[in-house]
Image (cartoon, rainbow, N blue to C red; front, side):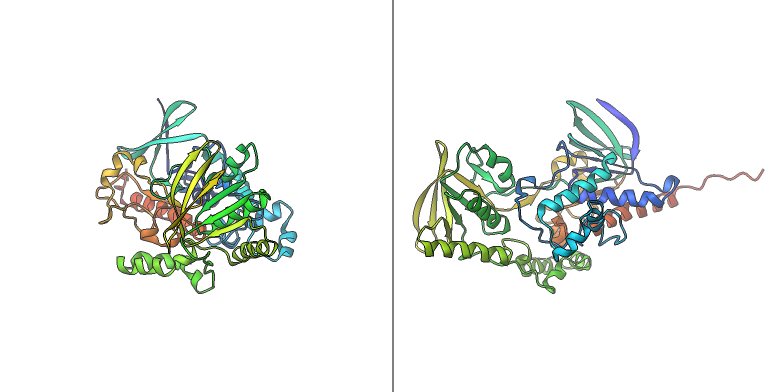
Length: 435
């Protein structure tokens, strides 16, 4: 096992949009800082290259947040890492303005993220898996696996941004013909022949996008959308409701009582969870209606229904669907089943190593997180452990979303700077000789 002698100010675990925004915040700070005022950083990412939900980069799908909520603008409107700077560099600024939209396609936004990641690539080690975090005197040690070998890197602060993972219904198992939507575009190319029937489970934006994609891509296939509601519910993206994603809303949420936090989450779940853009809802309804007019229905919406059983078969899967009001069940002989049932934050606990015992938890066992996104600990650690994501219970809906990523990155950077300044100020003064 090799060990690095350098002690980094910031060591990031994971390199999706959240830690990319932090890397940019460090880089912009270092442009004007000098000497020991700079912050050294290093980020580890287990993927071989930058990527953000590549399996859902469906052609034509658009972002659900404004391009102004990019990696930097809400923190630093003058940054040359902004989406507008990207457009200028790609010689598409005038074209985008003429497009008259606040919401770029997902493919274009991913290209923006790659463009930004390439500009800070010297701070990132790809194809590197973090094994464990541990205390080591005055620093943290992070054990990583790269090229089949273990390495140890030292840091004063660690920032975990381990991303999301697929959320599946209880008892559901993925397989050759049972996928989660995160893998859609990765897996669809494996099909040796076009499916005759596809089943999509879920009522949110991703479910509707998968349904639309399969219906459009396989013009001879029947696509069955299964969900327990009577119909897709539109997302509330009205101006006042969108204030739940404002930076100030994080302050309000963090100081609120547990009861008020629960109420706020309940009130505003329809801004983000199990909701669909109204334009897509209307598009799918129009298709289903026109198919009824023609008498050749391919898009079937099995509402007020739930999948009760899934049985793999040769080259496909048998899906038993129950109509909830009557309890009537029907078996769908399908070639493909896609669970578009959402994502959940990955649990950072396995990476915390021996520091986990010092991390405070609430009555539900969830990690307690300070306003600056630093884990609350019961003992004095050699530095700060920060979370990007998995903090909805302490910071509100923006904790795992892009909306507040730029501001959050700046707050974490500034917290590290502030704590470093306090630590230096507390150091004993050196003796001064007047001889």
